[in-house]
Structures are given as structure tokens and as C-alpha cells.
Amino acid sequence: MTSQGKAALVIVDLQNDFCPPNGALAVPSGRDIAPAINKLLALPFALKIATRDFHPRDHVSFASQHAEKQPFTSNHTITNPENSQETQETVLWPDHCVQDTPGCELIPELETSKLHLIVDKGQDKRVESYSAFGPPFRSPRVSMTRLAATLREAGITHVFVCGLAWDFCVKATAIDAAKEGFTTYAIHDACRGIDRSAKGSVATREEMEKHGVRVIGLDSGELD
Ligand code: VGL
Ligand code: ZN
Image (cartoon, rainbow, N blue to C red):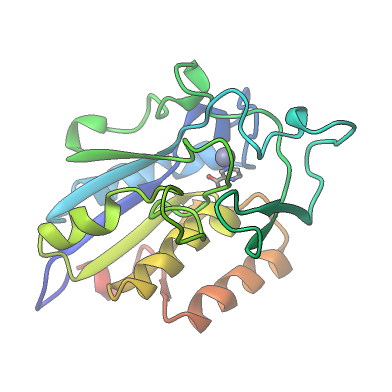
């Protein structure tokens, strides 16, 4: 899978709430990628990690926390609570992946016994964090996850990203992995997007590629 270096597999947010038929924020055909991801879990990655979106009940990304806002409202501005100069443009969502609810658990199809580690994200109720590395703000007290440190401590050089959702958390996680200096791949056919239009999917691909992420398919030689 890499002739030199060490590879990690990062499975993003393959959780009940992101999967049909009953997920609170179901990604169309999100559950269909489970067999492909289980096959990836059988490959000799040095580190196999699953991430979970893991929100408190009153998370800022929930439309329910904002007067008269409907889920899927876009261009909602969140201000960095530690630095009012910094803002993030986000989407308001239905309540999803609330800590200690069944919705936040990994889907039962996923072969979790093959995982080395689960990384939770999105716990800070004040900010959105699509990336499993942490929110876009780099202020003290807006906390990052330990994902970058964990990968470095394990000597990882190559990161392969798959999961849900292609256009949100997969994209943000892959771009941050590339920014952290890892040779980063996004396995497009082991992902599904919230926007399932071809245009949306291509725009996401282009944005990832612009940041140096290599978009590959499951049949790519990079996985041999
Ligand atoms: C995600 C929307 C809100 C994701 C997480 O995992 O892609 N999307 N929270
Ligand atoms: Zn979320």
C-alpha cells in the first residue's frame, strides 16, 4: 500500500445518525459503503481509526438551538468564542450524533474489532468541527483532537480517508491531513455525500485536490 512509509486508514463518521433508514441526518445510501470499508479494514494498514461526530445536546450546529432557524439553513455564521475576529460559515443541521444516544454509535455492520482507535470530535458546543483533526480555529481553549499527534507518534506518513459525508467531514478531514503534511488519499467510492448531485461531488473532489489530496478509487493500485 506504500512502498516506503506507513499508512493509516481513517474511517470518518460511519455512525447510525448518518445512515438510512432511521438516521437523524442520513446521508443517501450511506450504509452501502460498509462492505467496502470492511474490506479496507482487512488490509495491512499500520493504524486503523474510526472517528465519531460526538456532540453535546446543545451543540451550536443544531438548528434547534437557534430561534426560528430550520435544519439545512446554510451560510450560518459562527464566531470563534475566543476571538471575535474569526468566524466560520456553516450549515445548521437537525440534532444528530448526541453523546450517549444510539445515533452516535458506529453502525453495527462495521467490523469494529479491527479498529485500533476511535477518535471523537465536535464535543465543544461553541464551534463546528467537520474535521477529525479539530475545528478550524487555532485559539487556545478551542480544543483540537489528538489525531495529528497520534498519527505522528505511530510514524504514519500516508493517510487514507473514507466514510461520511464526502462533502463535509471526509473533505475537511482529508484536507487537514494534507495540511498536516501526510500524503493523503480520499477513497471516493468508499464515501457518500449529503449533496449527491454530480456537480456537488465534483466540486468537493476539486477542492480536495486543490489542497493536495489524491482522490482514488477502491481499485487503485495505491491500495495494493
Ligand atoms: C457531518 C454534518 C454535520 C459529517 C457532521 O460527518 O459529514 N456532517 N456533522
Ligand atoms: Zn455534526
